[in-house]
Image 1 (tube, protein in one colour):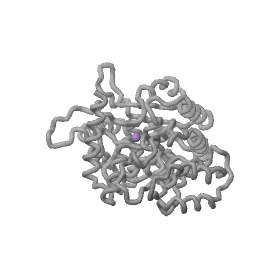
Image 2 (cartoon, rainbow, N blue to C red; image 1 turned 90 degrees about the horizontal axis):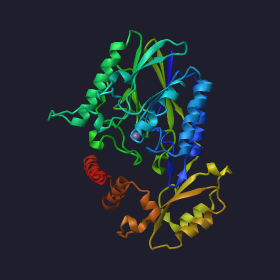
Image 3 (tube, rainbow, N blue to C red; image 1 turned 180 degrees about the horizontal axis):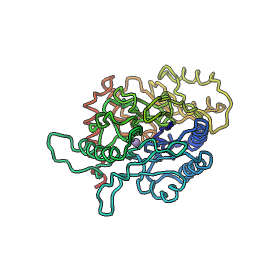
Image 4 (tube, helix red, strand yellow; image 1 turned 120 degrees about the vertical axis):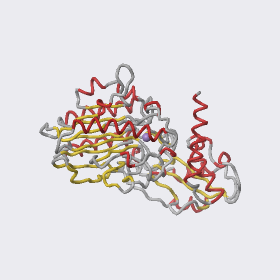
Amino acid sequence: MLRILHTADWHLGHSLHGISRDEEHRRFLDWLLSQLQTRAVDQLLIAGDVFDTANPPASAQALFYDFLASARQHCPHLGIIVLGGNHDSPARLEAPQPLLARLGVQVLGALPRDAVGVPDFERLILPLKNRVGELVAWCVAMPFLRPADLPVVTDADTDPLIEGVRQVYAAALAAAQARRQPGQALIATGHCYMVGTEISALSERKVLGGNQHALPVDLFPDTIDYVALGHMHRPQKVGGHEHVRYSGSPIPMSLSEADYPHQVLQIDFEAGRRVGIEDIRVPRTVDILRLPSEGPLPLKEVLEQLKHLILPVRPEAEWPLLEIRVQLDKPEPGLRQQLDEVLADKPLRLVRIDKIQAGAAQSLADRLPEDALQGLDPAEVFLRRYRERYDAAPSAELLEAFHELLDKVHAGDAA
Ligand SMILES: [Mn+2]
């Protein structure tokens, strides 16, 4: 028997419209620790984006290391594998490895290389032991792959990025197969964007230079018993494959992710075979309210609704985050003040006002407060403008073209 818990995309250190998520993360980690104990989990896989930024705040690092130390203390047999995501700094994630190895934690921030810079696929292959110390599975512990990690592919008929990733996985899987004995399971990880995944949230940054490089699911041959993926915040199976899964993030990373089911996955193996996958809902500490729930309404109606809103009393750290959607037919300079007045005695935190100007063809900059505009992702601005203009979502091709342009702009910034 081998029991694995798969999670990803914690984004420790995240803040949403200026509000710290530390308390939500702390509560998630407490809950996770209790799950690891009561479910007698053998191995915890964290498939990338542990931190929200390459240089996470001290509070986020403290949360992470406190969790790892507590896990060691309360679950002495637990193995933990930490993979770098596109948000993580590989070097920063790996820096405490000498210390963490003694706590049963293996960290792979980026594709490992030997002293002369040649990829060392053997180091990606980690043995997984069960409670009684038997080696029952192998894990191809693949972190997020950056373009510089990939071999140079010159075949003009293939996409060099996709083909490069394919070669890296093929080499690593071959190394794992060489060690695998009958009765041992094979597990792989990845932090990547796959063909057939639902691109929904704008908080999911794209991988490998754009969504056009979505990876095909046949990257993972049937010899693999389970693929633990990170990067997409909505939990999902890839291309209908039961065993190729994104766990999703444990807390919503943007207001638009409020309705996702937030969960971790438990996968059980018996004699080298996968015998069950269970999703375990993460309890939500802080609710996200988007009002009016039926969509933007005129200010008078919005104020009336808010006035009659009844909410349970909670500690301030648990007050719901509120987005208000209001329809305006003229500029309302006193808007924020009117909303603040009606919300003054409510246990709520207003984080965003979505103002829809009836009819007027204005720029987003005119109808959003400056702080809201700065908080917007360029892709979100594009999507909103497109929706305003054509009353529909842009096609996948158009979105890809947009991301390609965005990459070129960013590449120009970096140069
Ligand atoms: Mn990611």
